[in-house]
Each structure stands twice: as structure tokens, then as C-alpha cells.
Image 1 (cartoon, one colour):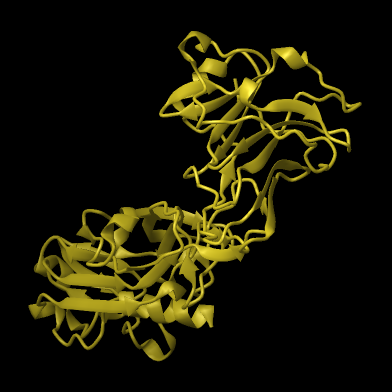
Image 2: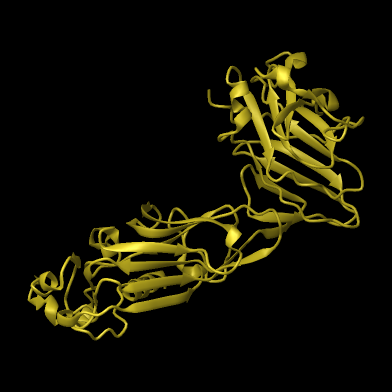
Length: 405
């Protein structure tokens, strides 16, 4: 089915569609191909979405443009397109009429899709972040306008469409086009796939973006997004975040009657955080709960973050009193070490535990940051005292990703 769809799309993009003008008197055409759904889109590896799939926010999707210069649609060596040469066309992107703020950027790129074995030109659509459970209809489009006389055709069984032409050609003048040929076919005799300067092809999409939904009793991989969680009303809920080996963070709370959904994504990647430079002289570990979600709970939730400074015997490898825990508040580093507690669980795991109603961005460091003089004392509403009772037991030791010096 995917091969058939790719070939149909390739044929459509070759722009024949009933064009009858001969090259000798080539005319401008204006073609609009609209209504393509999520089924023509793929991720960065080339894995296709389903026609009715909900595309996750903060992701990038691609529409591969595959025009084949030969008869085998699975042979990357036979891929070619006149729009691969920017001298042949100009391109215009349109975010559409629906929820345009949910599209960060549209561009046209050349890319290899590993899962498909393709290298081809593709429309690249970068989607915005969203922390809600809403769905957004998106209707972007791209328009190619020919700057030269073009011959764009596909060889297919029986010579249709394409009249046996196996390439993609651009010419500065009509005379130049009429004097060209491919094999025994003179371009001036072609009845399709010939376009005068100013010819347009508009490709329009319609798909939906949004987070899926899960129960709040759930386990997540660090960095996983694309969902919101819905707590069970008046029930105990536990969410955990893990890496490839261990659990990194635990959130325990009893939901209230409201039980509002929230976005649970947590990342340990520093990326280009402005405050990363303050920890360049030491190992420091980031726990960033994207969007700072508020927890709908009857009382403050218990949040535990695994301490990374543990040796092979499960003992702390640094002095407990030297460990500093920061929260990033309005861009400032806030020392919250005294608003929680460092302790060892019954299973022998070292954690920093605190009470909170809202998740934030936390950094666990083996010593004060280089900009410690700029850090401010934690306000009461930022982080509150840890619980008196022992937190639930955690799995054995973890190795967290460290800031790359």
C-alpha cells in the first residue's frame, strides 16, 4: 500500500493531469493538489504515520517528494526532480488558515530517510510545543512556481504517463526545449509534463496535531512526550520517569475531585540552557519537567529525584553536606536544598525528596554553582518541607546523563 501511495504521489507531483499543450506552444498551468492527510507524512527516519494518526506536538514531520527518473520506485539511484534545482523554480510556504501558531517553520530540504533507504527532497514541517489535551487542525501548503521551461516526466509501463521521457529538464527558452530530446522522443512532440515559466503546483495538507491521553498511574522514559496524563479522582497516583537502566524520578500524589490533566514530559538533556555554564567545572544533573505542570492533588505531591553521586557499592561518592539542589525560577538559580531532604530509602537508594504542587526544573550538583552568589533563597511557594515519613522504596542505583564539559 505504501509503495502504491508513493507511486501515486509521484505521478501526481509530475504534473501531467490532463495537460494537452505541446512544447511548441507551452502554456502556463496552475495545479492544486489538496486534501492530503497524515498518511503521506513520515517522521525523520521515514516511518509513515497512519491517515488518521494524531501527530505529536514538538515534532518534525516530512512529506517526501519522490519523482522517479526510472521504472523502479524503490531504487534511490533513480530518484530525481526538477525542483531539486533552485534555478528551475521558486517556492512559497503557507501555514494555512487553521491554528497557524502550532506550526513553527516550513522548509524544503534534501534528506536521507534511513527506514526507507531514500534520499530525496522533502517538505519539512516543524510543529510547536503544546501542553494541553486539545487537538489542532493544521492545513499547511507549498507552492512551486516554474522559473524556466520545464519537462518533468516519469517513465511507466507502456510509456504512460511520460511518453518514454526518463528525466527532469529545465530550459531557458522555448526554442532550447523544442530542440531537445530523450532517446527517440523529441520534447517538442510531448503532450504532457511540459510547463511554461509561471506554471504553478500547490500541494495542500490537512492533518491533526495533539497529545494523546494516559492514566496518571504510568511509567515514562525520560524525554517521552506526546501525551497528557489524567489522574484518577480521589485516588493515589504514581508516575515514574526512567532511563535505559533505572528510575530517575517518582511523583506520588492523591488526586482531588478536579483531577485536571497535565503534561508529564521530563528531560535530562541540557541542550542550550543558559544556566548550564554555571556548572561547567563539575558534574551536575538536570531534571526538567517541561511546561512546569501543576498537580491537581488534595495535598502537596511527593517528588523524589535520584542522586547521581553513588559508587559501585551504592554509597554516596561525595559528601552529603556538599550536595546542592537548585530550582530554576524565572531564569534564576534558587537553592532549595533546605526545602527538601536527602536520604536513603529502604532499598538503599539515595534520593532528594520534596513536597510540591507544581513540577519545575531542578539541578542536582556536587557543590555550589559558579554563580552561587547570584542564587536566591527559595521562596515558600517554590519548594516546601519534605514529608516526615520515608518515601516509597526505589529500584537500585542509576547513572544519569551528566553535563558535557
